[in-house]
Image 1 (cartoon, rainbow, N blue to C red):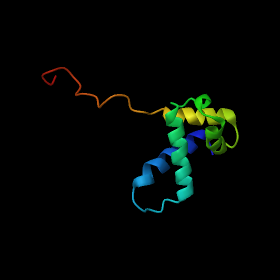
Image 2: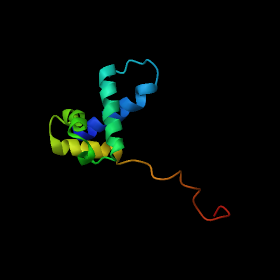
Image 3: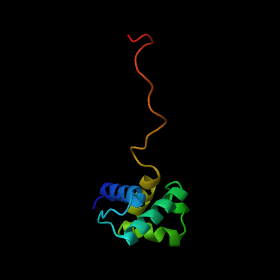
Image 4: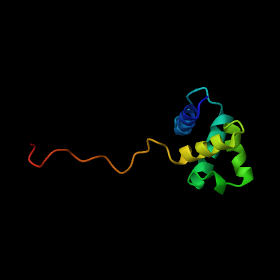
Length: 98
């Protein structure tokens, strides 16, 4: 599974965590682990080096022991590439409708 796919699964699992009792195929234990990893990554703003070795373990496990992949995963969780910046854009065009 690619890092991007893993991130999509992670975000989807965390987002669906409070959406009723729907069976989405994600086990409760997996959902808890994903939420824990999300919390850790957000706590340090995506900087893997700020985590203690004990805190790094679940992220390393998700990255199959690859430390570079774990660093990228931690960063991407806290800094998603399509994160909206600011509010909705205002109406376009010049005043007066033209």
